[in-house]
Image (cartoon, rainbow, N blue to C red):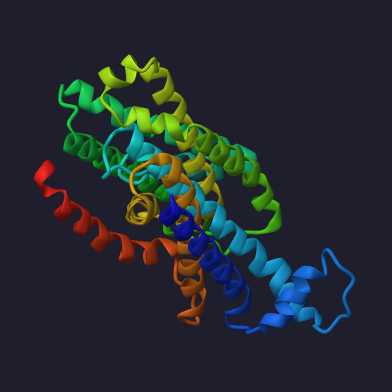
Length: 334
């Protein structure tokens, strides 16, 4: 318990430091004390020591973007942790189950239909639900529900959804709709504003709180179905509820940032290295680690070069070798 509290305290402090650094760093450097004063000026009456450009960069550009990175990171990582617990498979993530690609298909359809952000979010959620249902249905059809078959079925569904996205790109208007679809595919926080941030904020916050409330159930669902039922748990109902909440979280993240892969796989494993496999400790640790991770990734995305690097590309460079390492560590289970 002492180790867990110490690890969490250090993680929270690191996360707070990264948050402040993300507001300071960028193509336009702003001193730490000015950033701090600008933030406090919303709550206290302070003498104005900053110019208008500093205020606009911090409050209108960087702050909503950093908060967006926190929300997207938390949504993807928490849903990934929940999926891994429900399916008793550490290799499962929103990407490998096809949820991210399914949500992207829904979002792309919403774009082509010129729906509002709420309409796009609803389409993304439906797309994610359809994708995860297909992934769960295929192992039943081939009568093999092993861990590796579930992952392979997720890859099949992801490939199918990617083909649909390709078709939608082909029929999209190249001057308007195609640009938005490409944005969804690459994944970026460049277009995050206070308006679209406030649309998805309630969904991600409520969904995350729900997973936190159900985290002790994840420990039970991580057991075999027979053991969970012997403890008085309705396995099918609990599993459907958690899958639904996790899909909603993933869909909300996709609505805000597009497809950002690997976060739902990498962060739960990093969090387990810190606090172990108990979901009562794992979920809070995942929240802090994921927020820090995506803030750092976004900082690199907008500061490494003059042209912003899409987050999906950066996370892919990190996630691919990590996934290979996970496969190597778990080779004895296949």
